[in-house]
Amino acid sequence: MLDTSNLNQNVLELIRRTSTDLSPDVETALKRAYEREEKKSAAAGVLNVILNNIEMARKNSTPLCQDTGTPIFYVHYPTGLSTLKLKEQIQQAMIAATENSYLRPNAVDSLTGKNSGNNLGKDFPTIHFEEWQDDYLKVDLMLKGGGCENVGAQYRLPHAPLQAGRDLTGVKKVVLDAVYQAQGKGCAPGILGVGIGGDRGTSYLLSKQQLFRKLEDRNENEELQAAEEELLQKANRLQIGPMGFGGKTTLLAVKMDWMHRLPASFFVSISYMCWADRRKSMVLRNGKAEIS
Image 1 (cartoon, rainbow, N blue to C red):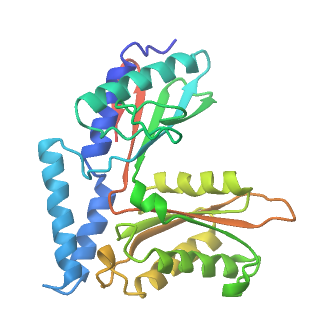
Image 2: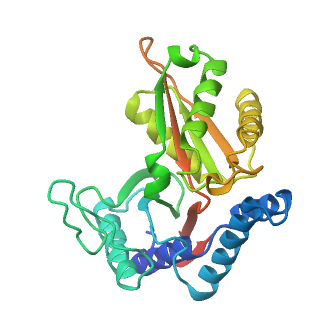
């Protein structure tokens, strides 16, 4: 049986690293974006501030953003472990992370407006459990900020205002519209996760799952891979730029996936992630935790 006795401490370190240490692929993409922008432009100035912020957050172990976001966990666990126990240990880690200021108290009761003060609440944080046949535990964590969450969008095809039909061409039209409507309000440069198909709920879920992908990975579906590259190029030609100040970098990546749907429905869901693309993974095996 896998030893999870120190899981709460391991998850605490996962939270700390996710909140304070931006993943290398995202930081590299931001550095490349800075080099592309015209020197002394507003876009270059914004990206320079972002890069300095990343360095200071890592050095001082302080959050990359004042909004430490909604914590979204995906837990893959071997047969025999109790999900009730795993959930309890994750909650303990959440409390400790809040006490250590790795997380801002973000859990607000939607009816009373009261903040719980420890980042625990009704269905907060979000935890997805999935049993698998491997003999180790894997915990993925994303911290999804509120500003970028607010500019996410869902479209129902066909969408007459854009003449977007029920095909990939229609999907591309609504995705670009979502980018245009967001302007700089999602803390650009952003990353898009796109879910095609499903129902309203599963479509959004699929779109957020795309945000766990590394920026440099390639879609296994050649048609979607080409669509991702096309949308990235076209979005960056919109000249919205970092924080909406104009420039060559509105998006850092587009990640897409699809699922089956009912004949009567065709949903396209777009989840927008800000430049602070905070996501990391922890693997626990043989008593040792590794975070990447």
